[in-house]
Image (cartoon, rainbow, N blue to C red; front, top):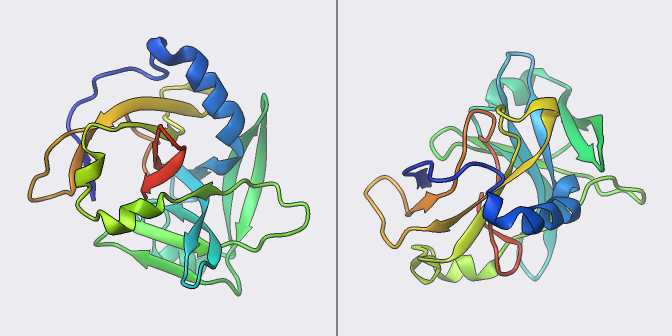
Length: 201
């Protein structure tokens, strides 16, 4: 759980324009826009999660309020849009015969991906140190960024919002982040700027 206390910056942050372009060039095939048939829009991302003995499971992750149990049970596939260079490509994620998990309380949905030889997607890594620091104490003050598809940007373009983790927690969340988000940002990952690895999903 995490909370966005204030929108302190616009995206992309003008102080980091060059860095933002580099991040998007490297990671644009790791995130996508989701537009489900019920009109809900959000962001999803591809990553590999540890499943023991150093094995990694390739998955697609978003929020439960974007892709919920009804969609997982009733639909055969999920429609997404993903940016590749300056081209926006429509793709689908099949749901049949895949591990699927969704949790309304923690607002998360996970779908197993099937890696293929000519796989289009790129998979983010999780910062393994987060499993040893579940209260994020060692992350307070760290520079972070969010990869997302905010609706304020036209033409379904991805964005990077830069920010920090606030040195403090409250009863509703593990930490508070200062990172600009908006409608369409739901389901996006937050990454550690120092190593480009996910610390929140």
